[in-house]
Image 1 (cartoon, one colour):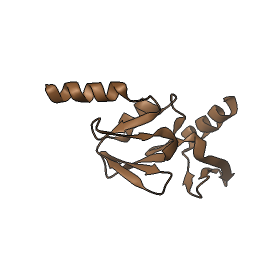
Image 2 (cartoon, rainbow, N blue to C red):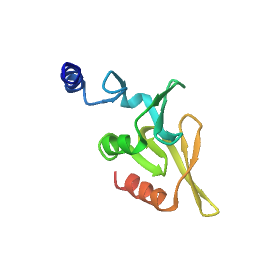
Image 3 (cartoon, rainbow, N blue to C red):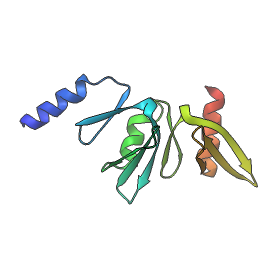
Image 4 (cartoon, rainbow, N blue to C red):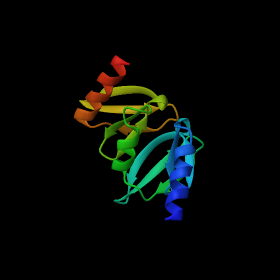
Length: 124
């Protein structure tokens, strides 16, 4: 009971621009996260701007429900939640859409979610 109260107090006092992980014990700033991808089933790999990563026991669905639409994150395909601040360009070759990040990484986009991402970027 006491542990729950402490964790609740900790997470309530954190600024909203941080992603809380490790059951409320740690946090990372949104602008340090390049993307979050699903990893080995129920785990998520949070890739950081400084070329590091955080392995989390929460699912990608958990992070998607927290971040998508609120904090400049977008589900680009199954298993990949992108930080829109790192998108350099979106290209289409032979009907396959790809997104390139400013860090040099490239990912294929799904047909439907890729189109949704392009529409979202055009609106905003």
